[in-house]
Image (tube, rainbow, N blue to C red; front, side, top):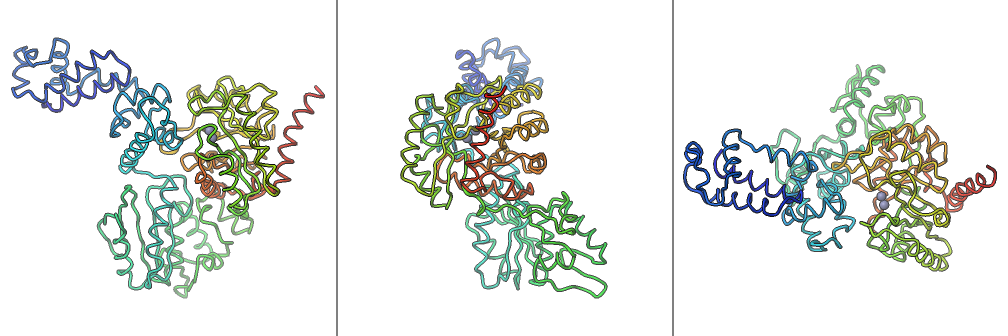
Length: 580
Ligand SMILES: [Zn+2]
Ligand SMILES: [Zn+2]
């Protein structure tokens, strides 16, 4: 341990103490000691041995003990204790330029932010604008800092993967040597997070395509190997280009798209029919069989074409063999969306702007859904502002013939499971999304009770982001998923597939379970701006991955049918009140 390393430890202790709200004198003492250790030019070991550490300026008795402890053990118990009491992500937060311990403390105290992902989410929802010591400029600087830090992490959101794939395929697709090109791998399968992006190109000669690929602006070339090229993009995401001959393309695309388990099962299926399937192509005793496309390959293997999203070895090969694959939902099936925030709470767009954007997308309804009164951090609406918004919606609706804004709310589920408004106000909404935004750590039993209470409330139309996870940032809270989905089915409560790429919640692995229990799903953008409406794209991909068809999804229904569903849910309540 040299004096610089010890100084770093003292510096960190000062920061952590400050985040924790420790005594300013104590914070200052560690900070001064850290500086004075940097300036110190003598031998620390010598001074320590002679018991004379206090001769260093700024080092009193307690700090001298600390220096001795670090010299002896290589660390400070106080540092470890502080780290143990603060959220795990605090160290990471402090690595963001311009954040610092003072602001980290405010974030922790006011918004309960303890990780990079939570902070990024808060920035994207403009939570930092009104926070003391923050504002628009700082929010942007912090976002840029987070972007840089994410570069060093191993995984990326699906949205990042799709964006990179689009950028690179655009660069290659028009090249005269490029006969065929496709994204592959986990991005093509629509996995919620990806480690890298795979592209497959058919061209002759491959060399030319690889050179185009390497020339991607801002990309760093990795060691090339044969006909495979690797680059790393500015955000740290790695992209692999597999270059093959046009004849190999279908089998290579199949190989680089399927999950490992799917590929093994598919090869097994092929072997059963007397074929040998490899990335190079499909063979039988007579040699290589010419295939023009993946569909061709599937046909020869006596399978209906399997959509990339399904290639996870979850029964898709058997279903394809028996021609009972689902007719997967498509973005064009959406007739409208729910869960859109406006400037009234934490969104950026007005009712009129959102209505115009929804109509431009060809939707016939848009479910307005701001935060409820308990969500102070997001300027949740009190009863008076709710009624004001209803008047604005009525006025706008009177101008539309073929389009309707729906009056909704994202009601916090309070810690005891109640919704956030008195019943007479809740009764006035067209729909109510009940969501958990606080008390994530109740434990599975209490959290399940809380969710079940919200579902049993006849005013609840939908359960919002059911698990509360933030991908690559925050785990789902613990609860009994099966019990919650069963209750949703029993009460006719719709379960949200939150399409925000940081959420994609309900997880696609549970969508089929939910559907089979009889739960209706809504693909909700949770938009906080006009662009946020585009999130539905990721939701549709996840829904497809969960084997869902249009008929499984509430907002694939025409407006009349959808309104009927909402009315029936509300009437169910009225009926129950009338006949006890
Ligand atoms: Zn929410
Ligand atoms: Zn929301």
